[in-house]
Amino acid sequence: MLTYIGRRILQAIPLLIGVSIIGFGLMHLAPGGPLAVYTLNPTITNQDIERIRVVFGLDQPVYIQYLKWAAGMFTGNWGFTFFGGRPVLDLIVERMPATFLLMGSALSLAIVLGVTVGLLGAVRRYSVFDYLASTGAMVALSFPTFWFGLMAIYFFAVHLRWLPSGGMFELGEKGSPLDLLRHLVLPVMVLSLVITAGWSRYARSSFLEVMHQDYMRTAKAKGLRAGQRLLRHAAPNAAKPLIALLGVELPVLFSGALVTETIFGWPGMGRLFVDALNMREYPILMGIVMVTAFFVIAGNLLADIAIALIDPRVRLA
Amino acid sequence: MSAAVLQRAGVARRFSRHRLALFGGATVVLLCLSAFVAPAIAPRDPLLLDTSVRFLAPFARWPFILGTDELGRDTLSRLLYGGRISLTVGLVAMATTIVTGSLIGLCAGYFGGWTDTLLMRFIDTMLCFPQVFLLLVVAAFVPPTLISISLIIGLTSWMTVARIVRTEILHLREQDFVQAARALGASSGRIMFHELLPNIAAPLLVAATLNVAAAVLMESYISYLGYGMQPPLASWGNMLTNAQDYFDTVPWLAILPGVMITLTVMGFNFLGDGLRDALDPRLRMEP
Image (cartoon, each protein chain N blue to C red):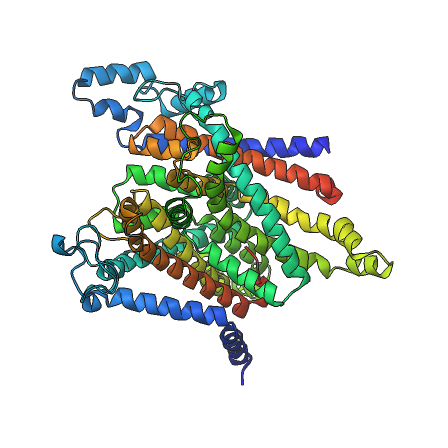
């Protein structure tokens, strides 16, 4: 098992390098490069810009710049914001808990609902429920997240006045769990809709695949009860593709969180990203892109390890 | 009757039994048609301001069938013209995705070895970035035009197509007809584009249809966030951004463009799903 984990970690390193090269390339693709903000400032002369170039090391060959930048990424030196000069890493770390709270809640809800619906659909295949659930999932997958969010705000916040329309806390209520929960309901509902739909489809097909295997028939033949068959035989095998899906879907979840945070003014990384975009704060943008890519790599790694824990064939292959 | 005709009849029969796919197909045809003839059927110029008729409700006054927005522009005309933009972006982005994905998948699958390893690593790397983040960063650098937006969407979503193509090619390249072509002295290019590519038309067609849906959705996201088509040009995404400000008083301004986006995306999704089931029953319910 340890060798397997070690091998998987080694395989993640080229990915990290690839991600960092693309990230660095994007940074230099920006109009005016990393110095764009200075060229916009009329009080800064061309000589000043030359001097800043030398100070930042931008006169050196590209590969040296890349190595320096990559070293900075590793040591936590992620540069400073153009406006205000705050360390980028601090700013991003500050916003992480909100994003992970939102993503975690939405994902948990989506998994529970999606797997339940998918399992019921697989057990009662071609029933009215199965038909409705499959069609409903397709419709939900076609919803633009932000539009669903706007509709939810209109109905639950503006029309019924049940829930707050945005933000994370009421003024003066910071730290109250009940208040946080009230603010969490709508964003989680919106973010989890599309993921639930995806999960129900995958859960249905992976349960269907498992149910017609020979070992399921053997289990039935030797007299195991339905619950036992499901828990001990079907579930672990059906879970494998779903765990893999967990890793693969992480980028989709991040994208969804960005849109959801923007609609609901949720103070997470996605919101920070959109604000930084409007201010052309390239260091923050690149920082967040790198953070998300890093978490995607880590998520896939964890998913692979979890699959290897369930299935010895994977780790011995 | 030859085997090919029989097979085609089977495809048509399976497709026509798929009621949702028929519904999707009809929706897609209607939307494309209405976008195509938009200049002829739009009741008014979509950019024409008329402050005397602001915020009209749908069906309130002729000829504003679906009402007007905050500047008195006709909503139906804007929806029709917005549809042209959404569908154009969807189709051009899909073409970009399919061409890039097929080329890379073909090269990886056909040449194998180091080419395959490098290209697959590249695909894995690209898949680490959440698409919306990557899209927005690039969209912030590049001035938004119909073509640039389509290209950006296409160039950030070709990876799954490349994977599908590669898997199919790995399977196909070992078969006898490829050996025969090689024995006849066909060049790599000829084998790739004349022998292999036509054999993966079915999965490519399905991927293309589903990709239009994804691209329309992506376009609406970046337009909504302000990095798509710029006002005063109407796109469904930026109509929603505007409507947000008058949400509590005139909700229909936000409801209508959203319904259009959902209908379009749903139409292409149902169509793609139906095509997949009809063309290859083995592929049912796969990603």
